[in-house]
Image (tube, rainbow, N blue to C red):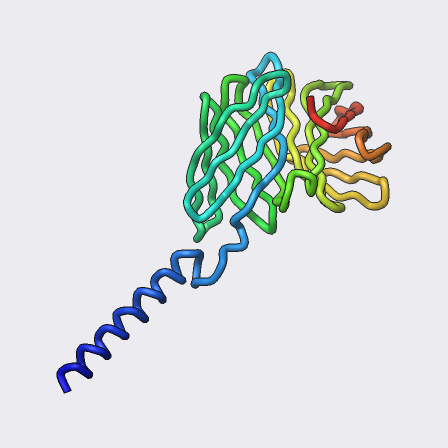
Length: 217
């Protein structure tokens, strides 16, 4: 009788251990759909000039890593944290910090670094070829960096004004027609080729043109 008690106690302990291990993979147990690689772009301004570039953030169960590459500069290694309950992500390295939240396969948020403050936008992809990155600029009544990441018919990204200020870009692609929105206005454009896009932007009484090319410098 005593051996049976010990045997049931051991089985109960083993079952409890397995259940706890399963829950550790994400909220409510099971796999966490947010785990994976996110590819995108950023833009920032210090009030007198704007900078931009690309960013890759990789989220696995054991931690977060990545690389931020300002245009014309070497890549900077990033490390950070991920909250599976809220989808919040924070990474930093080399004086650069990105803080954002994952929503429906996109990781977007704010950027702060040597070039100023701004925004970033990324798409989740199984490989880097799943997301096409376009880096460019805009001009007219204002000028600065205009960067976009495309996967399928979805577009995310960021612009940064030479004179200060930045915001995320969000939009869609219908055929070759591009439609974008940002906090203070809208933009339209055309996917001219697999490596080139261009268009116009409007923000209140201000307006101008924008361009982007892939791959990013």
